[in-house]
Image (tube, rainbow, N blue to C red; front, side, top):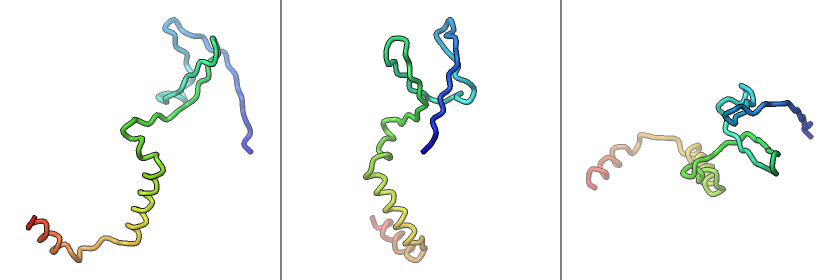
Length: 91
């Protein structure tokens, strides 16, 4: 089991309403939850845009696994390039 390390520090909210969490979090996205007035929980987060959320669904993961497996078992070949090009040209 991983040990839980809890640390506390005093921060001052600046005139613009901001606090600094430290350079190690620079550029990171965070979730800020107000649990009750004056009590906030700040957690680092990875936000997934709606139009990219499909890739995190179980069906997409299964489809990608199947595609990778197929590609590993079916190496690329130039053997039928001429036939394919002929079919494409004939529409």
